Length: 439
Ligand code: AVJ
Ligand code: FE
Image (cartoon, rainbow, N blue to C red):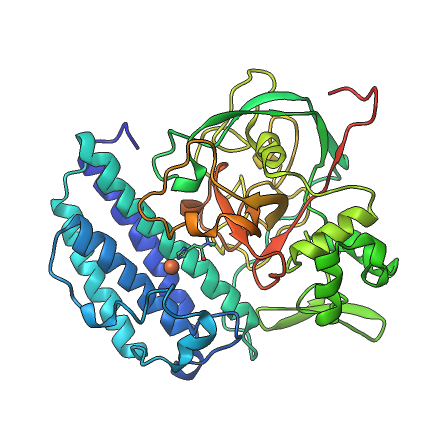
């Protein structure tokens, strides 16, 4: 981005904003007004809240803050402040209706593009102003993924459609050994990296082995068939309490009928596909599976080293495949397919050591609590990530099929409660090296 002229950068930013809006429109035009305004799950906002919230944040950060323009709707700031109202309460607020929300986000966007036109995007202001536009683009894409998760929870006929993902060309070895030693984690250079990804810092990671691909549904069925959900010893104390409190015996959206496992996926019920990464499992289930398999979840630093470290050069890459932005050949991103791709389907996206599908397909649970890196400074506000630091949240990495390329990087950090299953989360396992094993 730094190599672009201000005009090229503006065109790039405008394009990214437009792509995010096209996606928001697809997600909100796909359902009728009743579906838009009702709550499909206590865990989620009504879709019409997400839509107006996207506009409200854009008004605050681009129109008012960068542009210094007059507020459009100061009266609704509070309604769309995520910290004022928990998701469960949002349907009972006097929200903008579908037509009003659509008109509002259009009006905000017109003003934001006007601000972009006039904004200085060069010199010292590049970082400040371009970052605000990048942040708002990512914010809209993040809420689009949230809306996609709401679509998955919604009952009724399918309304979203996409072609199936590519097939896997060949079977891969089960795991890859990542040699021990330091690597540079995080970033000080990515222009659109959020505060929690910064700064770059050296981390020494002992040698470990990590799964070549995320754990598949077929792998996970073996855990179910072995009685994994019924054996206390595989579970943490919190995990076992959670499993019992909700009588959890399979991933969310799975059901067993007539001797066969089925899953519901955006309104379609289909047999569970054995070669696809498992999705809609909580951290607790991921951890129990790993214990049953005689393995463990990777730490966040292990995940990032597997994804970014090139042992041949010692250089940390932006993505597993190198420094280029993701394309359709690298990773399953952006709702291009409405499901994870079979394990091994993205050979062009593999890391130097041959770890596959780190970016896209499913978010991957790590064993690490969400915290700031050494030297962390909150930016642009504490509420983006700092207020979530602590042991209640686990870090997830890599993005899912529902994450847009604009909102994922090798350094990107997501976080959620270890009980959450409605997000597009799966996992892969790791293990310590055995004595004498190279690494
Ligand atoms: C980074 C995905 C945890 O959705 O709660 C959206 C992103 N922050 N609006 C979330 C976010 C404010 C955040 N996650
Ligand atoms: Fe938000």
